[in-house]
Image 1: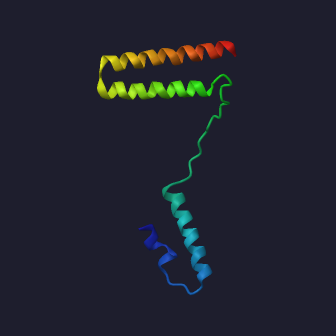
Image 2: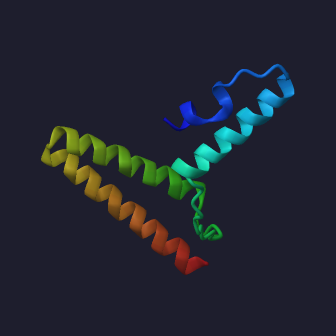
Image 3: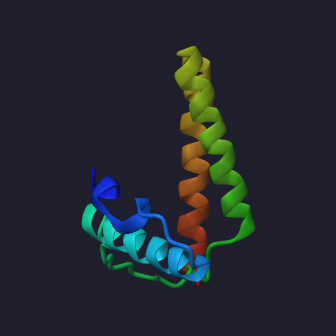
Length: 98
């Protein structure tokens, strides 16, 4: 509806004028229907104690959790719980060393 009522559908001979109007109309329609929203993003520095080993162990933990959730087997849950303790103990140790 907004595009139909705009000047875009009027025939113009000058190519530069057409592109300028096209740009203006689309910008105004975007501002009207999808205005820019401001967001506040807090950037936190990475933890100095967080290592590649922690990342690898957490990845194993996620894989084991997915396997347990898919199968529902108690043995898979035990492996997942054990890996959780491995990750938690590793993080505690690295934090205390730092």
